[in-house]
Image 1 (cartoon, rainbow, N blue to C red):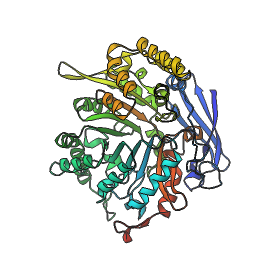
Image 2 (cartoon, one colour):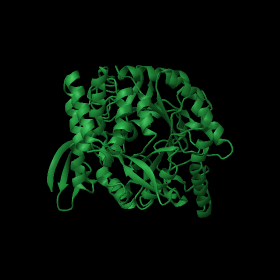
Image 3 (cartoon, rainbow, N blue to C red):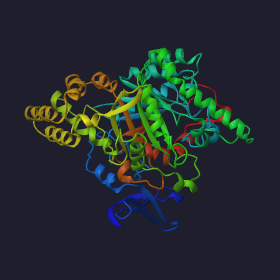
Image 4 (cartoon, one colour):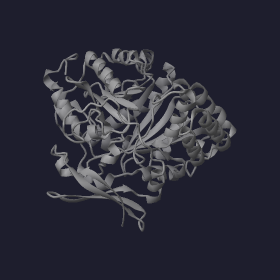
Length: 527
């Protein structure tokens, strides 16, 4: 195999014991098998290796779009230690917050085996108060100076179990955050009787998007990851009981689209936790479902399961799915309507954001998705119908993506007058009439949240986010993470913690320190 690069990782065995010591890791290209592997050695626990990509060509193509972040101007170094113990964000972090996450509770009305946080399993309740959330937002905004925070997700646990959720949403809105997502399992919103009215109240309070757990169209897709094997008293559930529970979950989640129509709500993201042999054969069907409901569904986000939750780590090789598996699987399951080459890594957005800042005379104002090129993939498609069947028309067929990327990148590095002209020339030359009219004209002319939203309502976004675990953890990746948790902190008001360090390392310690025993919890209890 050919050495591609060296990085730092952690020992999975030590990490499971709360020991985050760094060890050297190497990434290798296997040209014969067309694969990318990570290897690492722990002096105590020996050798570890993990499959990083099943398509080395796709992996290397994504590397061409790597972007450097603007860094953090006002860091919080929580401790004097090294990464990842001092997350705050610290001065080593390269990317400001693009999407902030606040876990408003770890209580839930489900008991998923793959969940990152569950009060029933943990034995304690983590639930910040309104006052704490207010101070958390102030501190996190300061860390992200000068741009602040433009998008935030309320997560959990299940946020809808909080009776004061509407007040939390209004509080976030008062901080000037335009885009507010609600991460939900859909059980309450999908209630055929009360769901539409509840969703209407969420919308009126300020929710922009539902980030809906959606592992497939059938109960079978939910059985392994979403249905517990025992009840609240620890008694084993029968196969029939588990099946009925999976059918109930499926019905409620499928009904969310109908609730959205009745509520006049038009932005749902279907979030699919992919597990090999469980639901990775349903990607095409889920995309067709999204297309059939594209009046309310705006995005499908595939998330290959990571080993950071309560998953049996001995099964890691059985369930590992890489970015390449997702994009190549989409190509197969859509009959080539959406090709793997239609997907691009997340940093492909950076030249456009930089160019808009240049044109509008602003600096460090727009979100830059300068994540690592291996953190995920995305594409946009127009949804059409052929012979009554849903069909997909990727926007990449309406442009020359790589030439446009290069053109905008060059323009954004020029002076304002010359750069503006270069960018306009690039857009005119490398996009067709439809894309000029529907995408670039509104975004460039308005240069705001509404302009982007107007276009996004005309397309379906398909994303793939490959979160890390202790087996494939890469410190070069995490330093560029753009999805950050905000957690309470008495000293600083808040800590801002990258997604993968939170779920691999920090969550148990932070939540235990800021929690109350499950038996002693009362709503409104200060954590």
